[in-house]
Image (cartoon, rainbow, N blue to C red; front, side):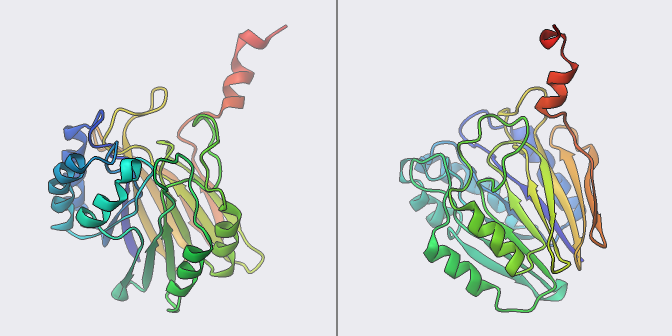
Length: 273
């Protein structure tokens, strides 16, 4: 079994909450996961001073366990991808956890000063070549969402070639795709004809007040074991934990943490005639 903590959308430089970050570090120390995955927007405007200042925070996580990060659209603002690679890590990378029989590949969906994401043929080819090991648990991490999320604002910033990645997860039997970007915890699971399943997991903003409605900053605690999956949402303000998803033997139970727009509409008296 591989144990993963997913954090995302720290937005250092705008509404960043030190108390939430301290809670996350304490949680990581206590649980000591196999790896921490950050799915982008570490800083807010891609400024070099923001990257230099956030490095000390990221180092505290790296001192505890393995760490991998992918750039978000805010990291790439103002040519910030240059500083991301100098101070945080490569824009795309692969980590093999041999003892856990797991592979985690991070790819870059961000482009300079563009809100929407794109993978592109060159990176898609690179991604395919990373899955040259027959490891049991397979994970992809990127920033932008591949499938629109309910109650997360207008849907103009999905990955432009999302269909290619969706098909990729089927062909390469990827177990889990980690994403951030919309600051909302959510999940979808697709069961393929080859009897495999892929869960598309979204993370809330982990350390900022850039939440939607009355949501709280949060991160995900993930347990992946030969296709079986458990995901917990952890509130960054008080570390309370709640089950988001359980997938076993290709049966998935998803516990929605928030209502969808249609549920709000149907319950509203505004629309009654």
